[in-house]
Amino acid sequence: MRSSIVFYASLILAVLISSECFAQTRTLRVVVYPFIPNYKSVLYYVKTTFEEAHPEIRLSIIDLHSNYYSSTSADYIGTSTADVYELDSVFLADFVKEGKIQALPSAIKLSQDEVLAVAWKASQIESVRYGFPHWVCGNFLFFHTDDKALSQVKSLSDLEAAIGPIGKGGGPRLMTDLKGKSTLGEFYLETAFDHYGNWTAVLPHLSSLDPILQSDLIRLRSLCDADYCRSQDYHENKPEIYGRQFARGRARALIGYSETLNAVLNETNESCSIDEKCLTDDKIGVLELGTDDAGLHQVAWVDSFSVDTKCTGQCAKDAISFISFMDSDDTYKYILLHAGASPAYLLPAKKSLYNDADVLKDAHLYPQLEEIIQKAEVPSTEGLNETLRKIGKDLDSKLP
Image (tube, rainbow, N blue to C red; front, side, top):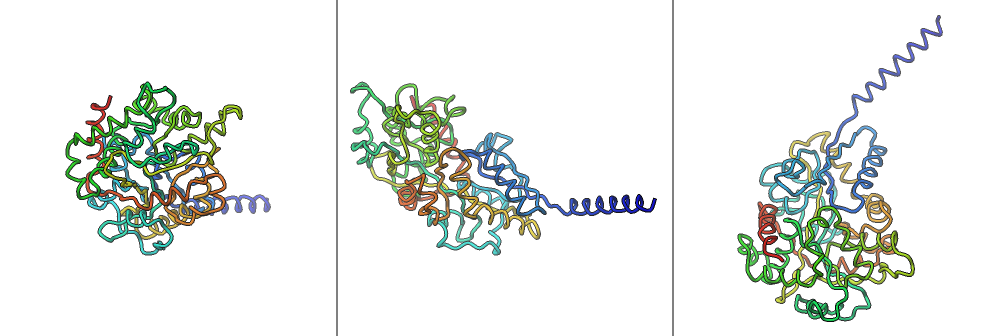
């Protein structure tokens, strides 16, 4: 009887201790930028690895992959509620104006020497830092290194001359995605920078379609074969098809973000036989993209971690722990190299990774990508996301 009493007393004590520990577990709500390769694998790694290192914190990841950018969607970043947001820089000015995020807590250590200059600049508004930069992105022109004509391209006319008009010998041409309001709005903005040169000169041309810029993008679209570049199905359901076709030599050039190369290498590593001679990483070259003839002006977007205004005290400390975890080399390298079969080819904001031996072993283009993206301008103004989506909607009806 005495042993039974001891047993039940121990059991009750264990339950009470467990309940107390459970009660002390805190939840941190976070939004992780969703449009990255192997997104689901990344979420699983982030949640399990972070919680293992911080057992007192339960990570609640709010999944907005359905439509992060659409203000009419339930999965819209602008109406989401979290403690930490990974914000595309197109939204930063809006979140600051609406008072949704606070200046980055001073306890977060961030040195200008640690991140790309473009990322350092883009994560602040009027010299106040609101974001901890994570990813940088922008459109590039990719080509086969043996294609000497494409290796010299510096303008839209150069690209037209290198690829040639339809019907001249046939063969592969251009692959890119020219569907979707955000996608087309971004192409329009990049073309505006190439033509007008700077943000001040570009701004007046965002209120309505500029005929010059519209003409440029019609010219760009004409470089694609008829069945590609303007498919709503591919845009929504098979965006990787353009990279996969490029891998098989069915396109001379590929336009897209750096992470488009993940689809290229997935095709090579997973689907191609040796005899098919699909493109390998060492056979891919990259150039700054020009979609007008007046000049080259790289545009970039920066995804940064920002902390909700209401996240203070212990919440802010937990947010700092999460951001520090996401900024660690181990987390970066998992996402870049190990979440899938091929390198993700995302552009980290962290400068040291562009010359990291582990990264360069399977992804040799990082130094060239860094050189191009460092020159970029990151547009930022209130309402920019909605402005570009409206432009993109209008442009969609004009492109063949």
